[in-house]
Length: 638
Image (cartoon, rainbow, N blue to C red):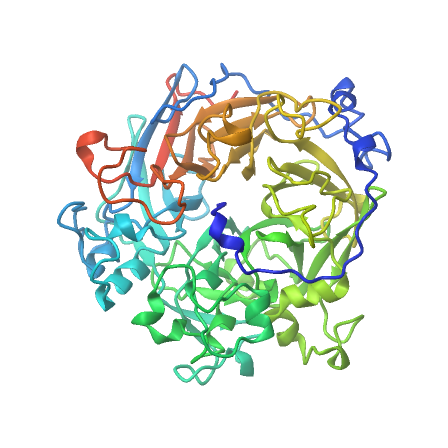
């Protein structure tokens, strides 16, 4: 997501050397489209291994035109249906409270209902180990809350109960879903139904588990945190667990006392960002509980097939604003996890497990994510790159340089990457791995601060200042092995409206215009799905006035074609995408429809921006999971 308040007060003071600004010559879009082998590079060679392998299918649907309609628009021959909306009951055996938009639901009821602002999503077939495309589980992130919508009177009469309700609207859902006659619905009741909230006990494991900096007055062991929140994108493992990622966790804390350097580096402020949880839950006052922030900003793993299992914060994967955690296998069977830190001038990471994935014993992988090596990426100006190990005792990560041990390195991941001089990027968001070639793509959604006074200038992987529209970068690991320590990279595409000169002074983007790429996913056929998150403060304004509402596109990475597949309702973000194994059903999420330009708190009434999905008589706009099907039952996109 791209709310403007996210970066206030956050400063990356890294002294990483700027890559030479030789970029205009190497980023001609006309050169990019002359031939698939050219790959838009004129100053350096294209990716090692040459052209991206063609997908197994090509996008075959009528492109959807740019739209400002307050509805989801899909190509002719497709149907999109909102299925699981904020406030819908999850179907827990203990009860299914109905959504009451005017009377308002209690905090206890919200804990049994869909949370707010759906984001990452993954389909898990039922039963485990099957390839069922008609019955499964959906694990869904609920990123944040708009209290003007959540409570019938907004922030008025702020209370402990309102804080508890807001906390219960965060976290994750697990719901059972089933298709009958091609129509999908949530199964109620279901023994799998579960909500994980900002108050759920979560284990802390890995190198930072139990470290002194993780201990608090409420948890002297440093091994159990309360809750997960601001869960943005996600990932999943080969053994069928879900990875939910804590992004803007810092925005929930305040510190009006003495700020630590790490708190400052991670964006905590004296007044916070408006959630006001600290007024009735003192653990969010970092002045009184300075170690509490250290317990957030992690990747959390849980088993959707076991509703009684305890979620686990996997500290070996580092602590920062995790956008998501995308997995693939190394040549020797170890797990590789790619990670983006979604802040301006932050870094791209990957984790390589110490042990191989056991494909025959699910339980043997239970703690696989606790042991391995975390790396930060350095992109060189000649199109090469390297992975810098965040290992205590090596390079600059020594006790003499201020890092006490490996737990300290991981708790202060950003500081460690600063010390290694990783490459500051333009807000790394979603990452996707091509299923056959193992090429890796990453959305750099935008960075209007690049080139500003006192900020980093343009460099090879971040070529535009200010970067209003964003771009997509890609790399191929040496030898095609995701565990490699080196890679070759190029820019896949520059986003934006081609009428504007700052898109590219030498050419245009390929295919249909879009801005602020965010969500990114390869389907099993190798088609790349791109979702956008133009912030509401600029949506249909300024440079974005002719890009319309946020959208989802489908790309053939070999031919370069990018075709618009879907546009969303007014004020929304398009996010989250997954399919059933037969590729005949797609699930996506519509987040914050009707969001106003404040990007934080929507008005109670009237909702002039959007009334999606329930229409004018339905009350508040509601984030929702949308089911997309072809009317003839065929495979999506082809």
